[in-house]
Length: 194
Image (cartoon, rainbow, N blue to C red; front, top):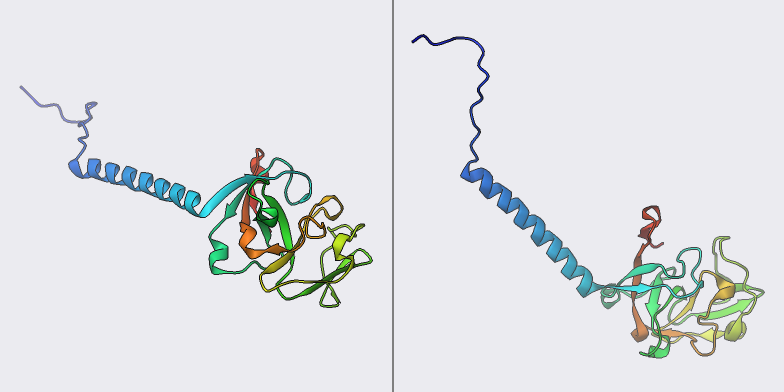
């Protein structure tokens, strides 16, 4: 019987080696472990809350979900411009408020002519904030304590914040954490909070 030389249409069957199977299982295990670790970190460090009301528009909208970093303020203090989540006066029966830090501990805060003054100097802010129509209790100078912060909503004329007598200065121990990422149904609108 003669062997035919030339092209053959029979392919040699590929065999799956033990090393390839081991590599597939190792990759699947590492992917699962990474996803599990990320989930645990988010639940231990983070917290998800919903925005209630229009006080933080245009940065955050009513009903939008926000991830809060509960760990960052165990290491650092809130900074001017941070958006923080807090329970007003530590009231556990209240919903979480989200507001922007404007005044820091030890500062003198006053709203004059619709603008925020810190230690007698005008706070430089961009033009996206409306002129404040009602200064509330900040009509008179407020001196912040060693662990107190003055917070305002970005939608200055539609916000219940540190100008309100029932909220006032926010103490650090009532601040739950820093808002660091917002979620949305629209994928183009998801992102970190400035």
